[in-house]
Image 1: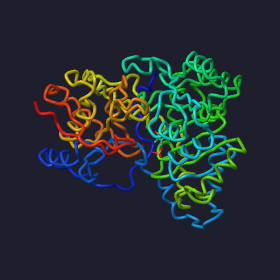
Image 2: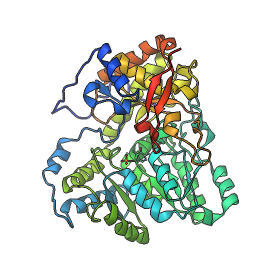
Image 3: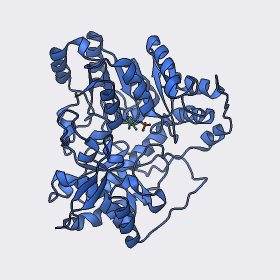
Length: 462
Ligand SMILES: *Cc1c(COP(=O)(O)O)cnc(C)c1O
């Protein structure tokens, strides 16, 4: 992927600043103990650089903030809803839009409407909330991602690709009626932010059409995926990201969306589709769980910010700068010999805790322990993406043991500078040099659902 020789600076300047708070190591040791060694339970004011998530943490533009003042807070038919609808139609290409308060609400409604109990939902790997809603609707998750995605050291440029042989195998087993839809995610989060290629998507769409099984995207990070297609896939070098995104979405019947990612806002989501019947039923259901179908749990001003964010996200200079900042951090870690998932993903750098801490067995939560140690070292907040996030198998009740045991350093959009990335890299390097001192954890409180959010731990003292 050739980068221009000259430095490419951020395509924006800073108009408002938010001071950061620095703390001492002693203070952070106390805070992480109080938080049960779970970075989700820290107070944000005790964090220096917050790389917990890129979800809802974006900096909005002056244009989006100006839009917030134009909120039409009518209960029904707000002007901002129509602006959102127009943005989705123009940029994603889907005709019908149902707003929701965030992505998981869109997943809830979609799963309830589109899955009959016992049906399978093939996904390219899984996402926590997506799979949870599939299972709550009686569906069965089926992983159809290529094997390379499960290997953090494999440099395949499109590790988000679907393995068609896996789809064929499932189809042979359960037949067309046994599959509700294909849930395809761009820049697969749990694989390390890895994109699929357009060629693969085209093949998947061909398969889906042949067997009359719809594709419903989890479109959360579709723009970042479009950027990787532009950079890596033959034939797309000179195409604007906006066109690539439109082509990607054209292969699906619709999508669920968490606007808190690509759309550059702090809250929001939607369902978008070309299927009129699905739209009609989603409108009926959104009223029960979210609000009227022209606001779906959002204020008018929030819909306006999403609408404007949708146009901003497809600016080629913006998306290049966003993904390159992630690469900048990843490259610094690679240079220092720190094991990370390669290729570097679109929204985060994933540190491979298995290789970083080979002396800690997976039952002692190495990624959880590493995220806690990083916070103590520098006040940088990351999160676990490994055995804790994977949860338990609903049938056997045992831990799911994912091959990937990762710490995610997630970069918010337009928030930090590359000097912040340097601070993060230096902290990771310091920990790597003293990695033998990091010890495993024992889980002392385990929530039943999505346990990683609220689980508590204690260090194992030898
Ligand atoms: C964040 C996310 C969701 C859920 O969206 P929320 O807005 O957090 O409810 C679904 N899928 C993926 C891939 C995500 O990253």
